[in-house]
Structures are given as C-alpha cells and as structure tokens.
Image (cartoon, rainbow, N blue to C red; front, side, top):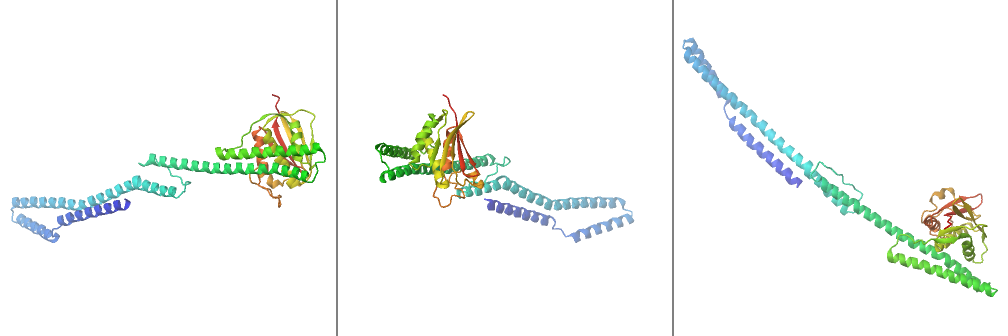
Length: 379
C-alpha cells in the first residue's frame, strides 16, 4: 500500500511538471531578439515623427508602444507564475502524502509489526495508544487484548506452579509417616515388642500412620480431580499439650530423641489436627536430618498467643540462608549430602499461617529453635 501511494504521488507530480513545462515553453516561444528589434524600430519612427513636427502621429505610436509593453509584461508574469503554481502543486502532493503516511500508513505499519510480534509469542511488547490517529481506539483495544492474554498466560503459569507445589508438598508429607511405619515395623522385626502392651502400641501406631498416608493420598487425589491450588485446612478446638504428648510419642518411634516438657497450663488453639501433625513431623524430620541431636519440645504463653518450641543442638541455619529458608524448594548451604526437596519449612509456614499464626527461627550459640506461634482460644 505504501509503495503504491509513493508511486502514484511521484507519477502525478511528474505529470504536473511536464504539463506545466509545456505551457511554459509554449507561452515563452517568442523570439526575444525580434521583439527588441521591433521596439527599436518603433522608437526610431517616433523620434523621426517628432523631428518632422508630426506630434499627433508620434503620440499615437507612443500609445500603441505602451500598450504592447503592458501586454508583454502581463505575458511575462503569466509565464513566470507557471513554475510557481507547479511547485505549489508538487508541494501539496508531498504534504498530502505526508499526512496520509503519518495519519494512516505509519500507525497501520506499527499494528502490522505488533501483530507479527504477538503471533511470534512476544506478549511483552506494548503498543502505544495515540489518540491523534484514526486507529487510536483500535490500538487501545488491541493493546488491551495483549494485556489480557498476558494476564491469562501468567495465571496459567502460576496455576501450573501451584499444582506442582501441592503435589510436591503432599509427596513430601507422605514420606514422614512411612518412615514411622518402617521404624515400628523394624522394631517388631527385631522383637522389641517384649510385652503384649508394647506390641499393641506398635501396631496401633502403624495403623494410625497408615491412616495418615491414606488421608494424604486422598488429598493428592482430590487435588488432581478439582485442581485445587491450596490444601484444605479444617480447624477445630484442640488442647495443645495433650495433643503434643500423643503425637510426639508416635513420632518418637522408640528413638528416644524427642524430649517433651509438658506445660503446667492448658493451651487451647484452633487448628487442623492432621495438618498440625504434619507440621510437627516436618520440623522434627528436619532436626533429625540436619542436627542429628535430641530435640526439646515445650509450650509457652505470650499474651494472646501459644508458642510451640522445637529446639535442637546442631549447627543451626547460616545467616545468609535465613531470608530464603521458607521459600519452596530452597535448600540451605549446609544441607550437605542429605536428600530433600526443600519443602519442609515451606509446608510448616503455610500450615502455621493458615492456622492464624506464624513461624520464627532463632539460631542459638549451639542449635536452632523453631517457634510456632498460634493464637490462643478460649471458646
């Protein structure tokens, strides 16, 4: 389109120049030397008539000569005006093309290039909205479409990422009860169940851990069906000390590395008991994996909050890792050759926050303390 308009403008300008040139040279087609000779002859005649005393005839000749000069001047002005008019015409054509180019062709070329970028998958290239051209509203609508497509693609990417996170979280959580089942099963295999009561306890814990695995796989199944972006939290009123005593006894699996100091006050919280078990298992699993020491667990009160403390005596977390330690899939510099997905503390923080609380980490001179802060409830 642009090339065709340029060709038409140049062709029309050349036609105007040729026609104007034809008129110019046709009007100027008079022998200038002959005209000068005629003027000289007329002046000589007038001079002779004056010398002979024929003044009336001389005056008539002078009048005729003046009329011829006026006609010649008019003709000269007309000839001179032809190039000027031709130039004005060519300038008008150039200005008209310039207007068409900047008002129509250039915005159209921009949208054409923008459409090519969009078709190539480049959605980060903005299209500037210009009210001054005829495509202003169309440009705005086109750029709005680009913005909506970009948002939709980002949402799709986020949904895929959340889907991966939940699946990874559930897979991570399944490992902990399976480890407990293995520990108690090994205890049975090693004939550590020396009494009937002990055997019943081992079997009871194994059954409970199997139920936990079943619940987690149900979560995974429901997530795959409904594409949930978060795990469901169902809080209920729970007395924390008694709950911890039962839970830590099961997690201990006869390893005797968990020291629980039962509080002398009642601590009621609203929390999902299954998720709270996951929280405790993840913290203790991390301590066992990286600190490899005994773990002290106790509960304190602070104003309207209940604080659940997990204290190990390992090397702690390096200061440079602290700002990122709750990020999903992040693993600290001191993890060594230990296997892990970097989801343990991410899950702990998520469960604590969904329960209305928070998580704080504190390095001591020897060891790390994890503080789970949960709101105290009386109702």
